[in-house]
Image (cartoon, rainbow, N blue to C red; front, side, top):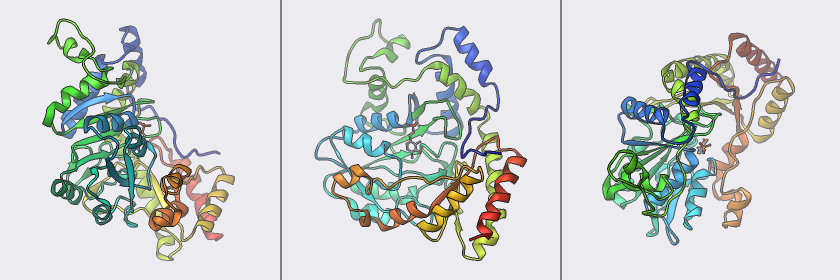
Length: 380
Ligand SMILES: *Cc1c(COP(=O)(O)O)cnc(C)c1O
């Protein structure tokens, strides 16, 4: 048997909706399923304006364009994350400044955010790792006091809450991912949530998303032709992909429920090894309602993590590492960082192991993982 770390699972009317989009000739952007997906998210999450995008990466880029981030500006973000947010900052000619994470949740530490703020800081970009919310009350308070924008990288946190409020709805902007590896998939896709309409943000976002044209106004019948009105790009996803996504969104809570069961089973299986002090399992603070995007354990050191990973992989269990911290990556070091600059991020990266987690994991697949995991851990 081989168990992947992640797998695509269809749960509802995916095929029916994709065929329907094709039959209706809706293959480009802003068709019926794009509108259905956006309004579904707006209604369920009770958040700001939702614009579907080609990816979370593009939603982050769009947000950085909207706040006018530019040369001389800085944005504070965690080092323990995927490169998208740092790229979005650097593509605007601004500087990413890496803050440390809390060892308990692996989310950005608000205290270190304060340490990293300078007169050049324009934005904070918190990342909700594993679908567990950052301390958004503290972060939004800091941002308000220092007059900064908050752009949530909620790529992993769709349908997850912090203090009873959906993530992506706390900052000025929220960025979701519907990539094939996430909880709810469109293959490639994302969304930008705009929670503020200061300065006509929504209309500007619609223009940037549509190649710098006022095509959205035209489609709404508010202008008789559309033309080039601003600098923009192409961030609207194919309706075929949004058809796939919409079928997944309709089953959002069922998907989370299935993943919760795998999560609980892992916790049950591993509690013995936690009490022995052999490992730590991911922590969920009481104020967080996660979406069970992934399941991770932390081994005491990098050597043990590598050994457990290798032995599990040899037995056909897809265990894998996660982020190489951005500050110690080749580009981070070119920016002047040294691996020792952010010790918690560096240590976590060396000790973290992700276990298989996907919606459609069967009981016999989980049992196979559990048996092998037990044997490997007993052998340490
Ligand atoms: C997956 C992910 C992204 C990128 O999402 P895309 O939709 O593939 O662009 C960005 N940030 C984080 C934290 C992610 O996990």
